[in-house]
Length: 249
Image 1 (cartoon, one colour):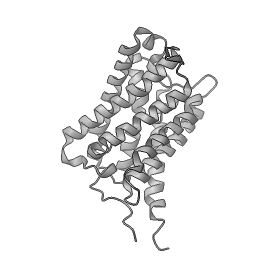
Image 2 (tube, one colour):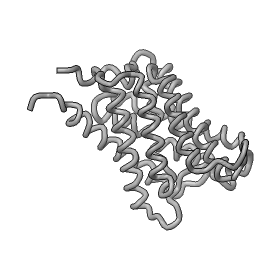
Image 3 (tube, helix red, strand yellow):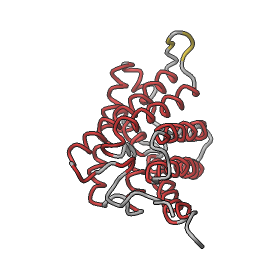
Image 4 (cartoon, one colour):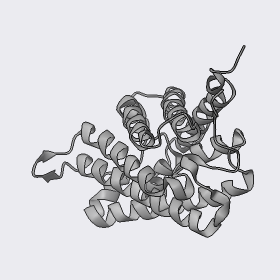
């Protein structure tokens, strides 16, 4: 039978979080900064209708910006910290025994710090209107969408993202080169689905960074609870059931 998953001491993409906590925290900080800056800057440009070499960015560009940015992050720091850049991923790994719980506060603090600095960078890039008019692309339920509907959508799309993360980043049967592309594509798909309903967060840090800097906290609980529920459900489904598909019955 094939070796289904990496040992518990190994993190995503073969990383070793225990080798140097300062290094892994720094990687998570920088990775989350790049993700939030890369995604929210494009989203803010779309909201403010800022033209580049042609029409302003549209919703297609926003989903692709987040997906491509995550692809680059996974390729660049996945081997160092596991490139969680998302508290929902960190908590899901801890819940399934793939990350010691005592690492969770460090990872989440680094992710939130990176998200705040990424939001500040978006503010600097686009000026005062980025904060006053666009709320730095913070995610909120769109008009006519209630909190409960938004919660369910965030659960569903984060389930997709974390299921892909867990499957390609913890299973030795998956070619390492596939992981960054698969994870980036999963995030883009999630934003495509949820964008018109919730803004497409899939990541508490992605929402909290812009919210903290802009001072707007509407429905914040949706974007904390939804991704965590969806992520943990996906991690348990893959780890406890689907990863054992080649095991004898």
